[in-house]
Image (cartoon, one colour):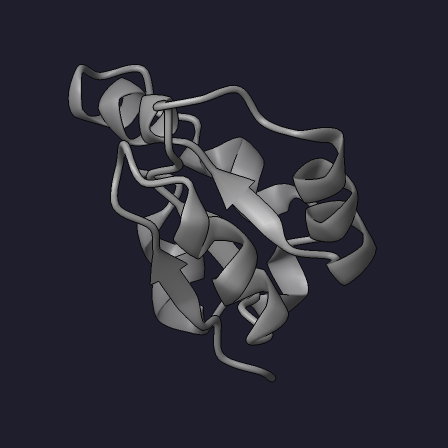
Length: 91
């Protein structure tokens, strides 16, 4: 099983999002909100098969509205998760 390489992208910073996709990141978390997403970036993320966990997903889990179970079951994400993540995500 391939371990997940998650590159957190600092909130409010647009530039690194494309860079980490180009670097081969499996997933992105805490995405920027300083400018709108471009079609080019969305297409790049989709073409690379990169998954996205926006900051709102993390906030939802903190306030008791976890989305981790659905994420862990997603067939695009599930094969990339280690047993530890599979155990942890459902909350």
